Structures are given as C-alpha cells and as structure tokens.
Image (cartoon, rainbow, N blue to C red; front, side):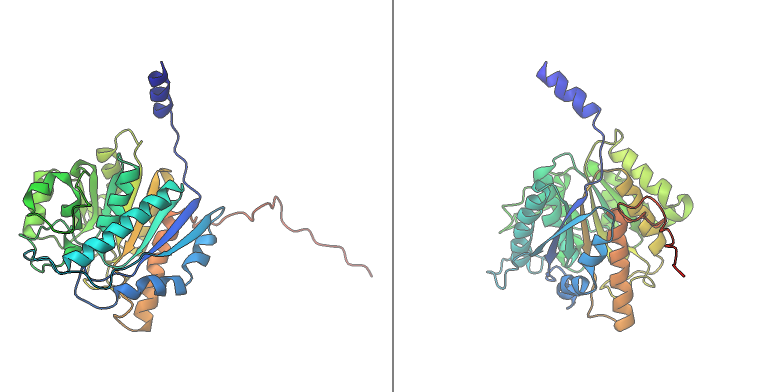
Length: 340
C-alpha cells in the first residue's frame, strides 16, 4: 500500500521552479589551450552576477565561492589527453560541490571555466538525481574520445566521459576512478550544433541522440526544437533538467570573447527563449555557463559576452521580459493633495 501511495504521489507531482540558487565558481582552463577562461568567474561576479540575479522576483542567491583548484598533480600518461590529472582533480571537487548545493535544495549554477568541467557538474547532479536529463547547448558536440579528438583537449570530451554507452571506447584513465559513467546517452539532447567532428556525428546517429543543429533550429524555430528534445528524452515531463550552456553556442557577434567561436549560431533572443521555456517546466535544477574568456577581444567584446551570459542565466532562473509588479504593492501611487 505504501508503495502505491508513493507511486500515486509521483504521478501527480507538480514541479515548481526553485527560488533558491547556489553559485559555484570554477576558475579552471586546463581542458583547453588558451589562457583566460579561468578568470571568467571573477569577471562575471564583478559584472554584477549576484546583483542581477537578485533582481529576479522572489529569488534567494547564495554564493558558495570558488572550488579548490589543484595547482599541481602528478602527470599521467594517457594518449591524446592533455592535463588529465588536473582535469580529474578539479572535476572531483566540483562534483562534490554541485551535490552539496542540490542537497541544499538550490539550483546549482556553475560558472566556468572551460567545458571540461561538465564532467563534474553532471556527475554531481547525477549523484543526487539519477533520473536527470541533460541539455547540452553548444556549437560543438563535445563527444570525442582520446582516439577521435584532433586536439587532445578534454573540453571536447566531457559528454563521452559521462555517458555509460561509450565507456568501452576509453582506455583505463588513471586518476578518474572516482567517476564511474552511469548517465545514459538516452537522456541527452543537443541544441545549437554547427561544428561537429565526423566521429561525433557517428556517435550521435548511432545512439539516435536528439540533436538540433542550427539548420534544424532555422527550420523549426527554437520553441519547437527544445520542446521536441524534452518530449523525446522525458515524454512524461517528470525528470530534473540540467542545462550545460557553452557561450559559443551563441553567434560570434553575440559572444565574441570565447576560445572556439563559430559563426552562424544562436541569437541572444533565441538563447533567452530557450532558457525561458526550460524554466517554465519547473524542473531546471542545474545550469553551467562555460567558455567565456575575458582575455580575448577588447573591452566591448568582453562586456558583450559577459552580459550575454548573464542574460542566459537570468532567463533560466525566472527573469520575465514582461516586467514584474513591485513586491507587496497592489495599486499605483496616489497623489497627495497639496495644501494652499
């Protein structure tokens, strides 16, 4: 009888957006080769991250600070995987922190850092919500293995490291014993793809991953695209959502300060609508914002890119472009009669 009651409760569960948010900074850049993404968390905070999130009606924001980043680790010898020991150590710490934030019943908002940190954010989320789904918003699929990668940079490999279906395509990875791939590729969807390697395309088609490249978004629009993905991987609309948002999913005109820009990407308006739709499900539990590089471009480029990232976060956490009523106010201010 108790099990039937639990089942009935779960079937009737109505999700509501969490109003509590936890910020995690990850000043890490060893998953790729360009200096600068490690300074993004500080730059984004300096641009008013906390203040702009607090403008959202009813939201409570807690900054958990930056995770501890290892300064040096014993190098490990794995073919075509640069800085694996550092990537592993960073992500292990990050996984624990994301789990902590989620257990505090807050949306985990992780500010990178390069996209290799997606290993830690998704692993930490999975440890709390094993039925989570993952929306990977990116110009790139990031599903290379060390055998298929042209660069050896781990920021192009996090999805392949995470999904259990690809575990047999990896060698033994020293220092990665803490991370056992359990997340299923069946719970993954892509938005914004336009620079996909051949073997990445093979993996996407082999496992029938719902992947909306820019040509698909141009044909169907962002609303139909994300709704299709959500219905495919969560037809009953019951699973917690994790969005891993690479700023290079945006067109280079919208976000120039990033390490691997690709022209022809999402407009900022499309990205905002995407995040508003996901917020509207009530099931968003984690957001990553990665690959902003304040060391690239001029001051205007940096400001434009960081502001775009803040707009994406605000949309995902409930900011309304329609505006909001002043809290506790029911009417317009009345004029006070002036005495003669």
